[in-house]
Image (cartoon, rainbow, N blue to C red; front, side):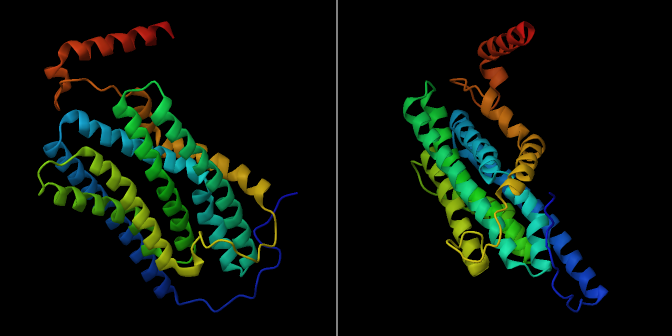
Length: 296
């Protein structure tokens, strides 16, 4: 039996004038565009500062950790942050707090389970995986940063459903990237800087932004736990839809990060122009790739 968003809609409330609705919509749209542009600019400047301050191999470790964070951040959300944009807004519009809590309860349980699996897997990979130490380090710190990132993304959807649009995009697009850029810029003032400090900052900044967002959202944030008031067990209904959206999100939004995670190679003794500074090693890797592709 299909499950509707609500059974008995609450009485319609007075709607704001169309001009006010349009103004809110324009502010949200241009605010989102501005946040994305600012985030892209902060990200570019962070990469530029890293490239000018650390050897290429160490910069590659940070970029690999970022790709792992982005990919696992999608995975840990289980797709709930995508469908929350629809269902939470609908449940709130019709005055059904029990359905809101039922949704968040399922999302919290599933996300915590996946986050624990990711954490255990990252620790095991760091200590026991047959990988270079640099790769193991990127896996560990990238996985740790992915957990608060997933929390941010779920709260993004919660804020959006409450029409608190600034809190729905600024923490992820602007907060994390801006703080990282600022941290790297300050780090350059000190001699003897270490790339491990940047990796630790990736995790710490994600945690700080996640906590700040939750505090600003107050008791309505997704991670106020435990709660009361859930009126239904929506797990079977939501998991099916969240799983489908997770697949779409990974294909459309994290495919590039997945390629970096699976296909990265660290070439010793190379700078930023790997194909020129280590031409023989680069050619060997390309030939191995072409050989595998031909065999498959």
